[in-house]
Length: 373
Image (cartoon, rainbow, N blue to C red; front, side, top):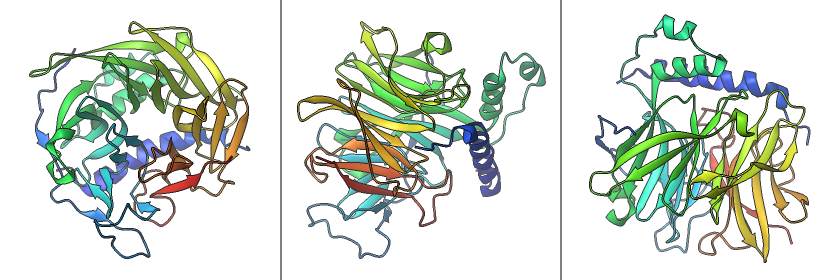
């Protein structure tokens, strides 16, 4: 296994790259994975809430905030289960966050559900560092391609999947399902009605893209990957993603713009993209988002990473309401409650805190936030 020091170095490299490239935007307002081994946590350890007793499974739900290192992406399944990614993949149970993967396996990102399958993005640490081809680096067309080659030496960008029908957290086993190629940092993910997967390549530079992964077959699935949208189509450095009624919503970042952060949408027409539309833009950085019909109106909620709040956008009027009063600790993901453990008048929010620092009391939690009237 790669040493802890090397993994910390890799996290530092990725984190430093992100910070340096984002600092100008501080908000003032067809491959099968050959190594498709099954992976699951060594045990089903639970991160209980700091300062509270471990909860009983007989309780109606967990006591929020729930501790989760590097809390990033959230997913409600169609049966109401809640999954969260960050330093690990976890399911939120009545007792807290149950870890599903081995420690120090990788950096986990977006999730999507297709049928009984839970798909998870993982930038997986390699057991040994690949040699870096200097000729390939010299031929790199741009800085993001160069950084992609560097991250390729340390990690594989893969899509994992587990069968939710297997049972509870202790029964979930992940397999490495698809090896993503030509990407710097695989981040957000969503699935359309035709069961295609869409993945954001976050570069922090205006050279990112959205790739489409098509899955054929069930018993022995074969995957193919293609670039679906790129910088020539109004995409710069995409991050969070969600799909409602076969419309892909995503956050984007353009280092060269005075309004770096934006929320965009694009229709999926028979698997092909329509025109990219911008719903909202401002100085700063937006992370993950959710798009629903809320009280009869098309509404988008967006995590405002730097300013510590959630933006609620009325799609029809363009009206923006900010929730959280700048009190959230670097929010990364936000979802409207489904009425089970999170009320329909509440948001569930991940607070990542400092990037790649999963242990402190700053961030590293999943919280509940009331939705304003």
